[in-house]
Length: 205
Image (cartoon, rainbow, N blue to C red; front, side, top):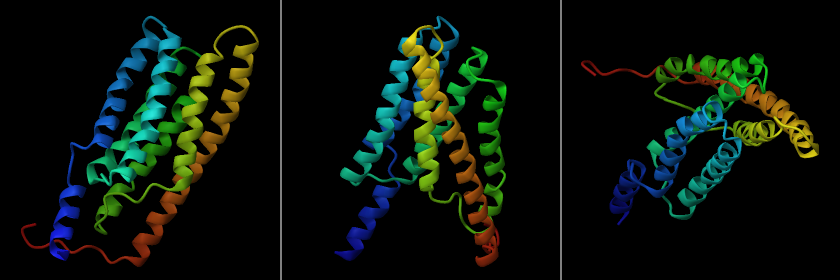
């Protein structure tokens, strides 16, 4: 019975076609659609609706993974990749529309680029990534609220003014937390390199 359970767990963690993963794929497919809506017809309300659907599916895929016990290695990679690509697409779209300054456009992918440079060091210890930190989730939460509000704030009237104020409040907190989470991640990698022996590669492996 125990061997069977372990086999089932292994099969589950290696699965790709799960409901949570399909939702993450759907969210990922919305990235170019969002950019087209913002930069092409400038259909901001449709773009906002797409961001709301994306935010909901981001919560829903995690909920379903826990509820249905459909965790997978593929999903652990796909979900944060979809989040980062959405943030990148949104910030580039807002930058090209002159809604946010270009330092905002550059500072977020710069943090991700620096963390990607740490991946080869992780691989020397047998890791491909570290678990997503709570601060990283909090940063993503703030940014995914900030950008729709900033897009909504690109207009006139009281609603646009309020959206712009709250959007920048979320953006400042989100950027700060995003970099704080990145620094903690880099520190975790540093500690791991100090405390974990280098993985030995078998001959011919």
